[in-house]
Image (tube, rainbow, N blue to C red; front, side, top):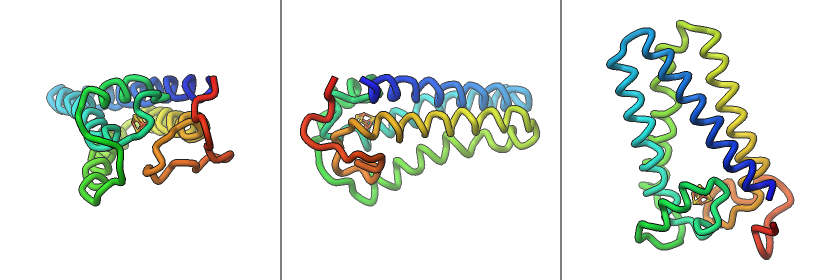
Length: 154
Ligand code: SF4
């Protein structure tokens, strides 16, 4: 149960970080804020299409929504290709780096952005990763104890 709770909470932290990025960008240029808002919608969808569709645990995803979306797409579980890593990395880089131009000029928002990102990452690693069945993900089993048997013992 803890993994699911952490998985849901982590998405909340990440969404809050993106909202902080949008606020920071909006104070510089409204158009840039809208552009980042579009990135914030498209990048997670790209990650779902590239990464989650190959996840063997998508039917019991701790983050819930990505697993449900991935279940509607027709890619089977399996190892990730170089293109998968590249596209997923690109999506993460866009989400994290695009707002930095505006955030570096607003230190309190910069600090808040990274606190929220780190909080999300901690909840993913300490909670969601522990119950994830995606054996092809590099983070699988990263947080001990390593998952074996039923990955969702709730
Ligand atoms: S566990 Fe991770 S990789 Fe699997 S569907 Fe959920 S978010 Fe995607």
